Image 1 (spheres, rainbow, N blue to C red):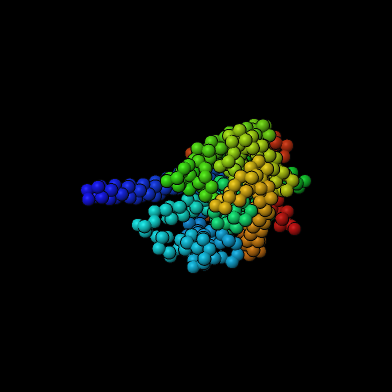
Image 2: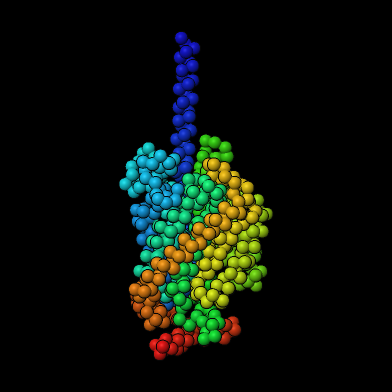
Length: 480
């Protein structure tokens, strides 16, 4: 009798221990995602700082406000329909319903804003904080576009485009190729572990579509088609903003993982394939180092492109960050960073696309290169719950899907806004400066006198007053 009681007590102790371990695991996961969300705010502090430094002084406040209002519009739109898109469209079209027999139906149910687990719920610790991690990804995706459109886009037009990109376009491609149940993952082994193409590539393609309709800033190109350079009003602020983005990227990388603390190795990527936090932290660090190196040499030491190349390098190795060895990550990042400089110069000088911060090359070009590198250097690696082998064909398929998805939606949406005369500020406002029209004549303290706003001519030496160039170009437009 006593032996039976002891045996029962032992069983109860084991059960209590197992329950405690499970609860510890749940709470650990909740805390982990909470702190990644907090640190990812630095990405958006960085975007605001970076873009404000690049903008000319007369557009500084408008630039900062644009970044702040991105959060204001993308947050509710992503809550009300963005999360549903991700959780209910993983099989493609048509969307599944919450009562479907598909194994993702439970996930779909959790993506409906009025579901029980999408609000305060003591039985579910993860859903809300995991949603917030994806929400921060959405802010990032919209902010990628923000800097490219500086100094001439209407605030209302930008915010509409930010909602479309941040709460619909990128999250749709994430449902297809950045989830355990996505059709690209289950059928073709598509592998984009830390979102080279899913976030950056698609955002860059969308931005390019918008820039085609928005057009360059007045005075950007000479009559011969040569490119002039607008001087940033604070290059130190620009570089500091990029460094803040880099810091937040460690949290971005971490938030792309899933904690499974009751099994070895304790971590899984977004496809639920095993990985470790250390491996992706190593690759992001080597990615920055390699990107800086490659861009420094190809840009001949240009500060802007050197630091931007670090970001391009990380984006270029993000797709395979969970499988690359550090040496391969470094080499691929250096190659990506170097090629991104050439891509940026081609876009600006040959395509005559005025991308103020180089977003199309740094995010778009590097993002799609990241998908390609996996197909070349990591083919055969098993991806997802079905262990489908990744392949060059699967990665090319992803590129073929994501590129038109991003570009065409950006081009069509901005084309409609352009036809309605809602895309771009009037030329007079652009020349005077958006700050002076929307806020007040000079938002800066009176002791900080304005330097004359000068354009750097294509020869890289001659300085020309911006107002004179823009006024003459405006007269020619009126005469036409």
